Length: 208
Image (cartoon, rainbow, N blue to C red):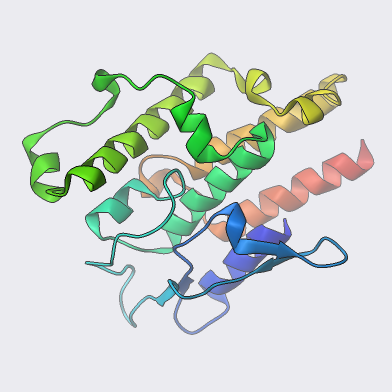
């Protein structure tokens, strides 16, 4: 919830929205009270006045945390939402999102392969990373459709998934992660909506 509030503040707390654009678990430090502190704003950018996004932005970030549109040089608040979804998956599964991708077989039919893609990504390494990103989106969609959330839960968390109430909370948590990682930016919630959802889940956990 605290991390969600940080990004929500960056998006709405200033005259121009600030896009962090470099989300990963490595970008947070915990103080003595385990309160997360966001560090390294070297890649953060303000959206120009009167605009809704940054075009021709430098492609940078961590695989698994970068929204599909970032590979086309588009940067806006929704990109942070996508990265936050990856962070939720890491918390839920206890795995680095990159390892989660690597640990599952990637099939060619899951990749987007078109002349348009080749034109956009002349660099071979970047093209591979883009294919990996499309595969992750398909993987997220698949576990959502197959209702396989509990199979992916970190064993430490799964030990507590005993009663129907807690299991339901875990599913809602996973569904929020899936929603944040929607392939289309228009289908993702805002960070304010995400923060409200996290607050709601925290309340439900405290009253269970």
